[in-house]
Length: 68
Image (cartoon, rainbow, N blue to C red):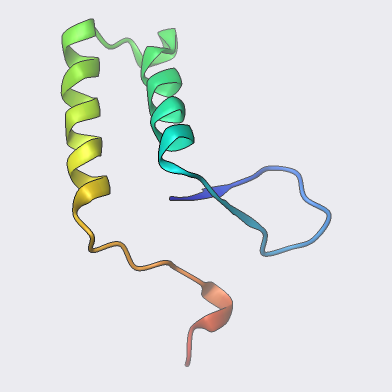
């Protein structure tokens, strides 16, 4: 998973997260009160995110690598 970070010393910087940190990020994001999700909705969202992560069809996006 490629993660955009807010503050960097250079442009075009991204961070690749391991599975553990990806799942931890999902867990923390879904538990936020602003999300206003019930426990059941959190479980459903996690299940859907896991399906996307396992799909294997992720193609990294690199704007500087795009050909016109």
